[in-house]
Image (cartoon, rainbow, N blue to C red):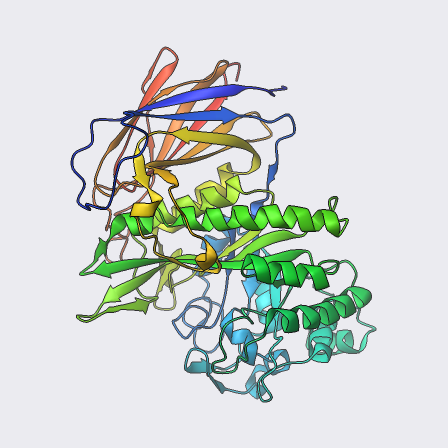
Length: 539
C-alpha cells in the first residue's frame, strides 16, 4: 500500500514542571506544556541499514573475550552463543580497537599449543592468541553475524605492521585454496575461504603516541591509507574498506587523498556517566549527551555529501561507521571519577543507548554502520557467571527490540516542546565530536525516532530524557492506523540493574494501549524507553 506525502502530528501532554534540581537547566519551548511530534514520510524515504546495530570484540583485559566469549584457554563458552544468536547481531568488529597496534595475525593461527603468550601494552594484560582468526570466524558463523576485521596499520618499529602483512591476512581469510595463504588456511583445517567483506585500516591513528601507537598527522595517515587501500582494492576489488575518520578537517584531508578507495570513515563517541555510590550524578549532562554526537554527525554528513559529489561517488557514496560507542561509567573512588568497565548496565543506560540508536536512525543513510562495545561483560549486553551461566542486562532487551523493529525506512521526525537549552547543560561526551559547540540548541525532554517497515507498520522509539519527571504523552493516531501495543523498558529507579542474584529487575513489558477514539495516552517514567507499534487498520 502506497503511503507517501503523509504528515502525522502527535501531541504529547505534559504536567506542569516543578523546579529542577540543577539551576543551570532551563525550560525551552516558550512555556509550551505539550510536546508535539510531526512525522513525515518522504516520497523516497531513506533506508535504515541494520548494520547500525553491530557490536565489537576486543581483548581489553576485562573478561570480555577471555572469560567472556571464551574461557581463559580460548574454548568457547557455550552459554553465550544462543543468546547472541537470538540477538541477530548484523556485524561484529574484531580484534579492536586499541589492541590492533600490537596484534599480529600469524600468532593466532595454526596449532593452539604453539601460539605465543605476550603481554599487551595497551591494556596491561596478556594475549595468548587462543581466540585467533579461524576461531573468531568460526564463532561468527555460529552466532550468525557478519565479521569485520581491523588491520594493524601502526608504524611502531617493534609492534607496527606492514601492507604486506595486511595483504597476506586478507588472502589467508579470503583467498582460494590454490593461493599461497589459502593453502596455509587449508593446512590449518579450513579449506573454504571465509569471504570476509569488511576490513578496517588502522584505528585512532590521530591520537597521541602511547604504548605501541605512534601518532599520525592527517596528511601522513591519508597518504598511507591511499597506498594501502588502493593496493588492497587492486587485489581484492569487492571488499568494503573502512578508513579512519575523526574531525571534519581530518575527514576532508583523508577523503581528498583516499576517498576513491574507501567505503566508510569510522567515528568514535563515548558518553561518560558519573556514578557515585551506585547513583548517576549530573544526569542531564549524560542523558542529553547524544545530542552533541548528532550535531557532529550532521556536520560530517554535509561535508561528506559534498565530497561524494566531488569524487563522483553519489551512486556508491562513502558513508560513516560509528565504530565505537558506549555510555562509559566513571566510578567515584573518594577523590575522583575513574573509568570502569565492571559497572553494570542500569536503567539510565537504556535511555542513553536508545538516544544514540535514535541518532543513528535519524542520520541514516549517511551512518551506515555502528558497533557498540562490548556484547559480553565489560559494558556488555550479556554478563557471564562462571563458565556455564550468563544473564541479560537491560541493554540486551533494548538492542533486540531495535534490531527486530527499527529497520526499514526512516520517517522524518520533528519535535517541539519543553526541555532544556544546550548552552546550560555541559554534555558529558568525548571522542570525535569535541570540535562541536552546541550553542543555543533546544533539547526536548522527549526524544523520538520512527521507522516504516515493509509491511506498512510504523514503529516509534520514545525516550524520556528527564531523570526526575514522569512524562505523560497524549497521542493522536494518524488516519488509517491503529495502535496495537506499547513495548516498555522502564523502572521506578533510574539506577536499577540486573545482577547475578537478581536477574529480572529490569525487563521489558508489553503494556495495554489505552485508546479513546483516535487518541491514546502513554506515561513514561524517568529514563524510560517505550516503543509504540502502529499498524494499518485493515490488518
